[in-house]
Amino acid sequence: MAVVVPINVNNPEADALTRKFAGMAGVGITDAIVLAMKEAIARRRASETPLETAARLRAKYGIVLTDKMREPLPKRVFDAMWGDDFGDGAANARAR
Image (tube, rainbow, N blue to C red; front, side, top):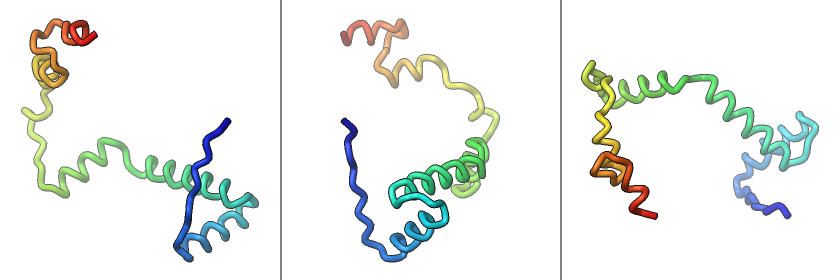
């Protein structure tokens, strides 16, 4: 059985736009919302690659990407983040 999650639109403009789009697409309100969201997400993803997004955010916040910053972090940093201070992968085994 599918879980139904209601959407309550309390904005007259959103309601009007949704109904207009549903009429243009020849679908019901729910399908119009799904279709519009899929199209918006696809358009947003196509408009900027992840690298372009990162570059835009760096520029926005004044972050300069140096050669040093491009170097991968050492394995010990990732081990410490995941609680594997020994670097032997044993943290996961100890957690079980």
